[in-house]
Length: 95
Image 1 (cartoon, helix red, strand yellow):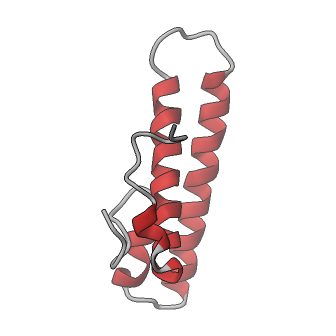
Image 2: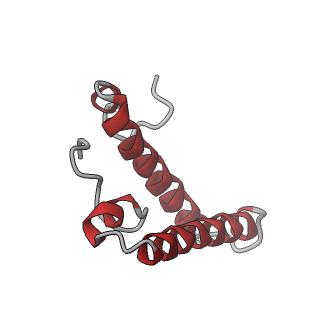
């Protein structure tokens, strides 16, 4: 039994932990984001809606903070773009 059946097999991520774990983290963040977005569909009066909103806002703030830090350190776009949960996958990480 898998905890996250719609995620790819994580054994690929664990072959090289330094490269694979950031990719696994991004996949898990995307999975959480997808689940939060699904909370907005359906019955409008449940605790999932405000919780999903707060989780998505927290993720957005973290992504913006990472973006601002990368821009202020003049990092190339290619270095940090793949690690933002809304875009791309890390280079070298399995898709």
